[in-house]
Length: 442
Image (cartoon, rainbow, N blue to C red; front, side, top):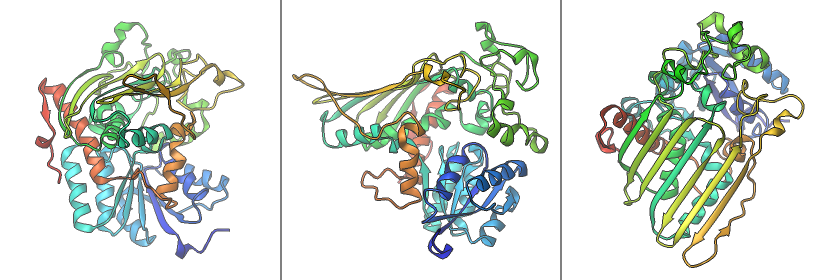
């Protein structure tokens, strides 16, 4: 039995797409003793209705729904304490600023926003209101990443000279950014903002440093209309009801996924949004192959590469220091099985087909003049971003102690964003970009 509502913080969520489900489930199950879900807001009523149906399946009553235009009125009527923002990235600042000025705290999905003026609005609202913004950088809570933080803070490699960070999105996960609204840089900021902000935040956190200057090169190589030259493209605009998409490994078949059908296919009549666009169709304005060189306030440098069309999914991080080297290598899936090619990362498969893909993680310390040491890490799992999702919600909803300072602030969100924005500007100009020229932070 849940405690009296008066003893729990009242949460409302805006943006009821797929990203909302993890937060909603955590609120009404694991953290029902400290948090209460009281309302949804969205531009699409069908999506809100789908989430309410799922709430009833969890034994929770449906919550009131509000059109996005009535967001401020919802905050007052439902006496909201905390707003969860999981809407399209370019709209984050609108809801964050309105919530802060209404006296609410905010938990927002990454990225905090998509450009420097919107970031400035958020930071100014935090300063004006004294309210709190927490950015859901769940990768900070991955047990592997926590261990990297501890080792570096304890001086395991001495003074840090450089970091090399390679992130690979496979042709299932990577392709998905080119089917949906993320393909439009005006909506998402591109993968340097939407995706890599996770990784830039990790480096800021690990190094306890801030980015100073960024030089980068990026292009659209594999996907989009020009990517048709690689020979994978089929002739259709969107996959649903298209014969040309029937056996296309790059096609998302919404009708085969009940959750996605409810959230997107059944909701198209309201807003016309197609979740299953052809990844090789015209209109892609984001990059899929990106290289970054960043310099930090400590003098350390980072080389970073993001590839969105890899045959396997995972990442490698190497930290070089005055006492040795720390190496993290994670294989999330060693290939994309044919059964999974038309699904989403993490989607349930039938029978034992999912077992075809394997993964592993290793963390190795290589000191000078000594054999390498494999560092054991407890709690890592291939599900839920390495076990990070449940650990994060225990902190932001359950009030669990946070000695590693994993809960990211608006200032942290701005720093991660600025590395990506500087990279985007460098893509366009071909020149190094000083972060302070984009936005000055205290």
